[in-house]
Amino acid sequence: MAVNSSTHRALPLNRPVQLRFRLSPAFFYNRTSSRPVFSTDAPNLRLVSVRAHKPGSDGFGYKKSVKLTDSEAPIGSSRSSTSSAIDFLTLCHSLKTTKRKGWINHGIKGPESIADHMYRMALMALIAGDIPGVDRERCIKIAIVHDIAEAIVGDITPSDGVPKEVKSRMEQEALNEMCKVLGGGMRAEEIQELWAEYENNASIEANLVKDFDKVEMILQALEYEMEHGKVLDEFFLSTAGKFQTEIGKRWAAEINSRRNSRTENRPLGRRTVFCLPSLFE
Image (cartoon, rainbow, N blue to C red; front, top):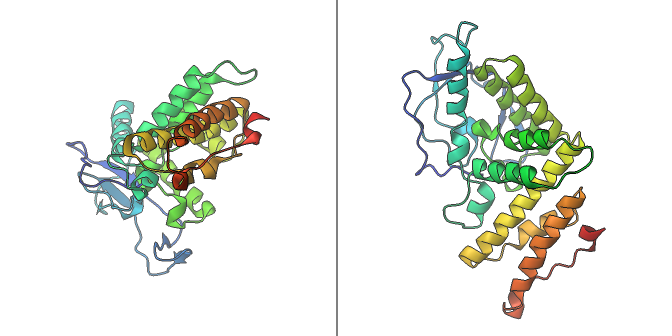
């Protein structure tokens, strides 16, 4: 979702975080077109120095204001694990300041950040009842990392018109660079594995966290409806019948039930009543 540049502040650093950023050959995404644009005239991006800057207002990390340099030394094996950890965490700072674009597009003032969204998903994994065969700790980890690449690419939503495969590729490349900043090793490999597991919906834990992603979104939508007096039907309609797990279905049904009870006091022209038998199957 889009960055609120007026509130974004990068942490002051004595030494910039350096990213060796290699995009796929001459690949750039044209926001004015629904198709990727390939150009042989594109500059050869190498090092990106992350300093105090204002990210692009559209939330796309590749459009952020950055300083490119050929003279700075690349990340090497001589960097301590402590230094790499702080560099990585500083890069993740934008997850706290980047606002989720879907809410901005619907006129929500001061909406949640990417980190806000992931945090409540992790809480969902923590408090969910025991499910046979499900690794709760792994669910929490997946929730924490599933949107982590948005620290670089920003929050890309369906309204941006970016094809799913292009979005996935952008995020994979961003994640690769983040793991290089971390210095590689077991933790970086684990982050890569957890992200890919979620992206590919490749396990029962990934199924559950994907449901939590939708549950968190509709719960937030209900809260914004109550706080701002808005009708956010789109978020409920887009998730209806798409939950994969029993707990996801139950929690979604509870949220929809609470929302429907509020529609009784709405004028008839603004009511939307949800009857979703698939949630109870």
